[in-house]
Structures are given as C-alpha cells and as structure tokens.
View 1 (cartoon, rainbow, N blue to C red):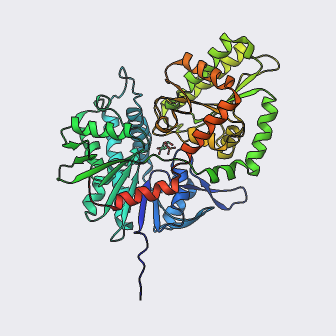
View 2 (view 1 turned 60 degrees about the vertical axis):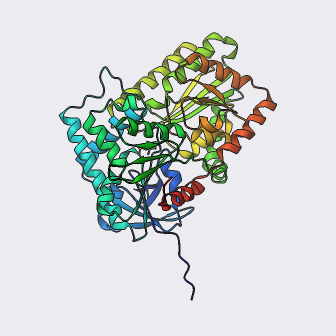
View 3 (view 1 turned 180 degrees about the vertical axis):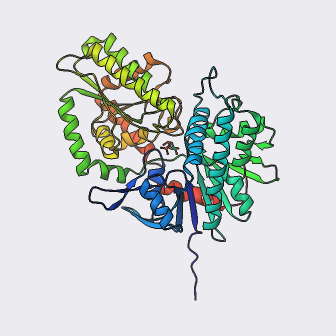
Length: 486
Ligand code: G6P
C-alpha cells in the first residue's frame, strides 16, 4: 500500500480574515470578501489547501460564529473552501491592539509618517494599549498552537502580529513558524522613535520565527539593519540574523503579483460593466486620470490632488478635457488621524472643483464607496493611473491597473513603493513629495504616443502577473517548510 503524504497542514493567522460574515437584506448570513491589500487575495490562494485561517471576529455575525463554533467553520469562496477560525476578542483589548498600536503607532512608524514634534507620545495610555497588543498577540499564538498538527507550519501575517512568533515558539517549539510583513519596515533611525523596551520587544517577538518574509529587498534589508543596530549578529550575505537563543532566523523576500485571469474575470462581470456605464456617463469623451486607494495618509492623496491641480492650473488647454476620478474608500475611521485626513481630502477636492470647475466640467470626482468591481471598472477605462504613495510594501493597484486596462493606460508610479522594483522600467516614475514632477508625469502619461503606451503596458503586464498569489503562497510555504538556514 502506498501512502501519499499531502502537504503539511497550514495555519495562517492574520488580523483580518479573507471574508467577513454579514447578514444580507433577506436575513441570510453571507461571506463578503475582506477589504484591502493582500488579505482578500491570499484567501482565494489558500482555498482548497489543507489549512486553517485564524482571524479576528470583526463583525457582529463574525462574533456570533466565533462563539457558536469555536473550532471554526468551512467558508466557501468561488475558488474553493477555506476553514476559518474566528477569535472573539475582548473589545477594549482589541481597540488597544488594533487602533492604538497596530494602526496608531506601528503603521505610522513603518511608513515613516510620525511627526516627531508630536508623535509618538508613549504615555500611560499607550503603554496600556501595548499590553493589550501583547495579550491579543498571545490569543493568536495560542489559537495557532492548538490548530497546528505535529508537522504543521504557521504563517503569521503582518504588523498586527509582531509578538506572536515568539509567543508561539514558547508554546510549540517543534512547529515551523514564519511571519510575513506586507508593509514596509522602518529604517533603524526611524525605529528609534520607540523607547528601547518597546523596540526590543518588537524585534524579539519577530525573531521568534524561523523565517521572516518581506515583499522587497528594501524592507528586508531595513529589518536586518535594525537587528544589527540592536546588537544581533547578522549575516547580510546569507540573509540571516542569529536570535538570542542561537537559532539562525532566515530573512527572505517574496514579491507578490496579481492573478490576471481572476482580475479580468471580475473586470468583465456584470457589476463592473454597470460601473463602467456610470463612469462613461460621467466622463463622456474626456481623458481619464484614475487612482484607487484606501483613504489613507500613506497613499499621499493630498499631494496627488495638488499635482493634478498644478497641471490644469499651468496648462489651461487641458481644462474641460480631462477628469480625475479619485476612488478613495474609507478605512480605519476609528483612528483619529484617518478621520482628519478624510476631511482634508474632501476639502481639497472641493477647493479644486470650486477653482477650476465650470457648469459643464467637474475636474475631480471623488468616490468613497468600497467596491472591488468599481475599482477594477475605473482601472479598465483609465488613460493614466496615479500611484503616488509615500511608502508602500508593494501596492497591488499598480499591478492590477495594467492587467485589466482596456485603454493602454500609462502608469505614474512612486519611487517609494515596493512595486517600483519590478515596474520602474515601464512606468513614469515620480518622487512622492515632488508635486510638480507628478503634474509632469500625468501630462507625460496623457500625451504618450499610442505605440509607446502599448509597448510599456505589455512590459507592465508581464511583471505584474509574474508571481500570482497562489504561486506566492506555494513559494512562501515551501521556503518556510525548509528548516535549513542560509
Ligand atoms: C493594508 C496593507 C496590509 C494590511 C492591511 C490592514 O491593506 O497592505 O498589509 O494587513 O492594510 O488593513 P485593515 O483594514 O485590516 O486595517
């Protein structure tokens, strides 16, 4: 009798799961795709694999499901099924962990967005939130420990779970533990914004893993350098850091791409078609400059709007002939800095429209409703796509746009996003703080000859589809299963 060993059971843990459970108008429980970044993409990649996804219960329905089925439930996605185990977490602890530390502190730290005249201010409240962050990480670690089979591997995701690798190692020293950071990592000078005890705990937490994955070499190198400055022995050639217990921790890069077939399928669907009709009515035969982002300070929406305004201010011939469609869907509205940013973006849009608009032309159209199909529909019709984030782990919109484009879009891309490593050759590159360069870049994109647009687009597409999420996950699992180092 032959026994074929299946892939080792996989446990993925992230704050947000691949779906959120909600009740629809007919009272049925439905699973909606989780919003933002990579999480909603990794869900389909995990579907039908032998694995479990552990995530926070975020909606009322999630919490009900978590209480009813502590062992988790199987959720059907179009790509297959995922076993989802939701954690019903203490609400107050969750706020400290998610709002104050993950997004109020670590997000700003790793994106180099702290304003040192005011932030961070590590007072008693922040310290209490840090303890909550530690407790929630511990909940994830113990859930992983329970789920892991003997030969299992745990893949922990992102800055929400920086302490969990060490906590899991304490519970399950036998397990393979990998942690993947989907955002940038702070340079050593920026990490010094944290008091030494917090910085030490953060690095120590991460180094509990066997493998630390980043999206591009810039962020992996920054991590290695922060370890070196903290006194850990590092081997830059082999990409390893020696932990305090003598283990060699592997630091690796896994640049993720998009799945062209899946995106084109959604972009051709009925929902996207309806949005396309709506947008065509709005824009008419004008040229279209598009951006699709979360309403998020790191996405640099204000300078993006200023760049567009500078262009139509200095080149009146473009007025009435181009529309900037800004799809910026609300995000993290419980973080005060996000509320303020949201208000400022709306004000800036109004100012531009008041200054330049005419009875027949609204220069900027702001849309804040979150809908994946709407974003893809806008990308299909874009003549120019603007991605000017201040700093971004990868930025998948820069890859989605070229893949679904039906108008041979030109990509204006920030030098500071991970995707720049693969797309710089074929994009129009701009520094995110250079507003005039952005105006120039949009103009260059609008004026680019057809043959050049098509030629650049072909190269963008090739790079964008090079490592679709399913393959990315396979590669990451393979590398983390390999316990040899160096
Ligand atoms: C972005 C980042 C991801 C991160 C996510 C969290 O999408 O690219 O790396 O996990 O934000 O967003 P959330 O909506 O859960 O706060």
